[in-house]
Length: 88
Image (cartoon, rainbow, N blue to C red; front, top):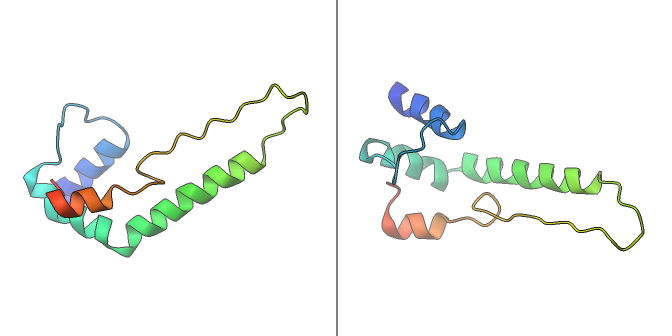
């Protein structure tokens, strides 16, 4: 298990960029995380932080402002795909 946790940290810091898929040894770990409560909690925190950030922006009222909110798997879950095709 320590190698999986270490691998997770390296993925989260974008230090592993050559993977095309999650290694088979990590599939159970990733599935447990994504189907468990922590994935939902992490997603809720990220969504809340994005909302708070957007609320704190101070735009002028000149009609020339644009806000782009990049929606990715943190906000729109790809859980159904992984559940169907496997977590590896």
